[in-house]
Length: 458
Image (cartoon, rainbow, N blue to C red; front, side, top):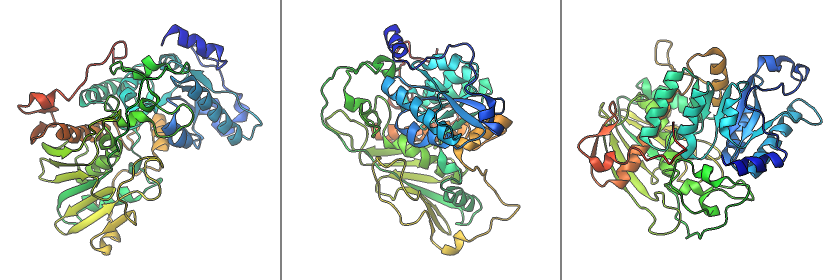
């Protein structure tokens, strides 16, 4: 964080908290059963679109935890995030006003605050793994937006650091929880218990992204610390289409730039591949062979994949195809029938690209499959009420929870394998234990990226 940027935040009156120690936010009498002594203090890092419409929105419902601090590299968004939290707790606690939320321009200062128990990381994808590693090193539990990392190598480093730290880690894979979509757990239980016979093939449907126009350089807004926003990725000129809208919380341009993400294969894919792995019983491994093709834009600022079809084969013989030509969801195909599961209502967010949709959230080749009772001695998958609530409970009990760091990594790394298959036009042999391709230097070169100092794991 540049000193000039830090001073500008201080002058804006946002009240950066001191790094050592966290003062009481409000008197205990305000909270009753949720008094400060009984609740977990949460910091929200990144308070843009997904944080506002999903992560902070869900945490506001918790009586066992409270957002006490927000952090963002855009001072306009930082102030709006602080106001959103204050207003939410004023309404929740039926107070005319509330002003207990601290605002940080530098996430390292938030992490240094020993009064904060855990952080919710809702930043662009290229920041995910690095922030998660720094958070667990600082002794914080972590809820991380998907995908788990920018590369497979980053993801493995994150797994190792989380395990070494002993901290609670939850990935934002809400299809694992009954709220709002219990049909995913139900579908996976039916598959795992043989209701469609032996599983043979899985089809995953998710959209691609459209290309866009050229975007000329623009002056960096004074409210944005652009160098820190680029983080570990190479320096490139600022243009609003590359970052996020300055006047609203619409879908940001970085979602379509390979410098910061791989596109919908990791965006929607992180959800659907995780569901597929859940039903396939391959949550802690990956495919052994991968191949495919994709269309990529020939011009314009946005360069993530468009139309695509990729294939994978697992050690147990099950195969997986992913394409936007399939309905948005997951179809399990067995020797005795099939089950299809998808979301109902809105997609990931209202502004995401749309793929073909199905009429119902859960369907089967024979409707009787869906009415099957899972017996007491059959496989019953972990049941979580809601992802954020599950994380809060795990923070309190230190017990197993819905989606740990290994599960998160294998879902994300499998998505990256499908992206590499788009880029390398041949069949690739993959060793999921060693996380290397066999005899293919070109493919192995895509497993990691150089991190630009000082925005590194160190």
